[in-house]
Image (cartoon, rainbow, N blue to C red):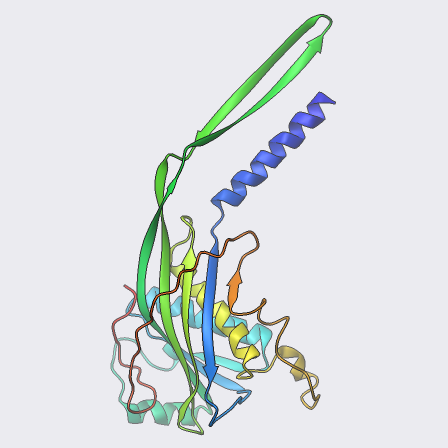
Length: 267
């Protein structure tokens, strides 16, 4: 009996430790649909992660496309596969390539800021023990584990995202976002979390159609909410707190379509 009880306690402690060490992210997006264009349900989308760091760009584009292919009716193309990152591309070249490939929309993910938040973890401890009774003799042992008493850095990153409609030649959807992580998350984790969250928001706003429409394109009243979004503008892993205190997100201006020329981003 004592053996089973001790084993249960140790399993509980082990599970808690694993939870404490797991990477955890939370993403909040605020989006708006251009009322003059409306929801489109695009079927062929290109995504451009406007990062100076190639690893972050690939993480954003490939994660977004993987989610699009798995969850929607659309085909997704990473911009890196069409435009060599080591060269600048003119607007005319970009437009000709996009139209020649039958791309209906271009999603641009633009980083606007990043940083870390330092959080002090107070020192704490827990003790486990076991005891054995043999006749009138009781023997036992205990172990005390101490943790905390130091500061950890939690990364965050901000983004501006817009969806350019090729047929309409204008921005049809716009969003700003903030992704935070715990001490066991790196910058690529934040980029991937943001890209995954984007797909759910685009589904909610009618910019993409859920995968079930592959079988029922003509079904009416089939909304894109619920199973796609993970519950409103905040998406985080189970057990993660809501760590947000929003600041202002700076804007970028474009006077003509989509530009694939490098611009300041997360390094």
